[in-house]
Length: 405
Image (cartoon, rainbow, N blue to C red; front, side, top):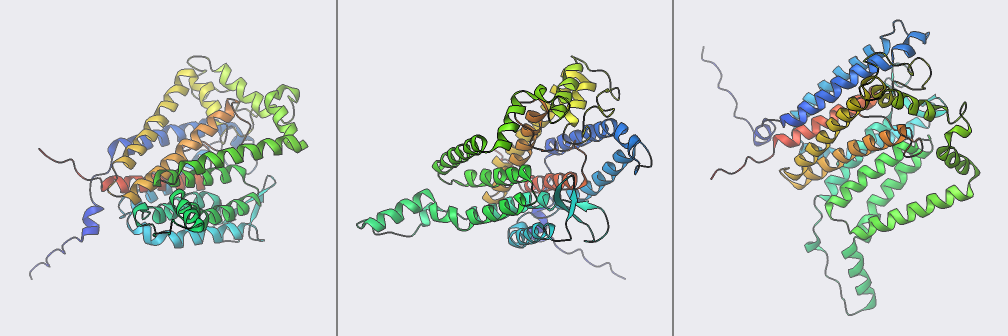
């Protein structure tokens, strides 16, 4: 019996089967590997004293399981033609918004005073944070809409009238298209996140979306105005709100309340300072033994520096820097504008998270509760971050080959 002839590949399948960007993949795997090792070390004491943990490696084993799930998502998305995400992006954004609304219903799970989680099966199973999903869906949707932006196709206005000149100016600086629908979408998301409350998630969603808008060519004046208004608003809030006044005073001098609200910052600085040049040695941290709160989560970099020293901390930051630069390289060489905008948004999301986390643990800025990508303990974040790497790899598959002379 004759064998059936193989089906010819479609153009979509051919595009999705190009070689991935190996430097980006290797950097992501290195960061993941070092991150898993640090979670195992930093979480050992926490798991040991946790009555719900069966073994001191319980946290590390769970993180390893989430890493496998994330790697599967990364592999599948890297083989997926990212062009299809343009069609799916409105539905993905709508779905993530519905999840944010569900968090505020009785289905939401409250932990440590915040209501940010849902259960996988709504009523049972492990929890996940919808805010991690919405960070990506906003980038995909904004990239989908803004990649078609073309100033040369703006409608003709009658510049001989005052109203016509106003409309022309509005078109040129992007006022109408910025407000509808992007501004409204961001306002709705920010409101849903602040009701949880989730300030760090709000910051990341906003900055990821703004990076896509900036790369798409939205007039720079909007970003200057936004930073001015945001800075002015924060200044007024800080001056007029006693709570914020006390937080800023504590940030300036955490030793004013060393056993209370300043305790975590102080212990983080002790951990970093005690690491010295080469560190105490892997697994030999002292601060992780219930001195530093959240050693396996937001403050895992402090434990890494304590154990690996200044040199180890610099090497970790170097890996992050190369990973971020490679992400922007993929954006610059992307096959089309949609891929470039998505790569810019995802890479900026990584860059902002790394910067803010390191700034918090070194007391450069007040505590914002932002985790360190690939390192901090947390299943949803790790799976989504590896899925984002998968999208970057999918974009890299379609980078046009260099022309031969």
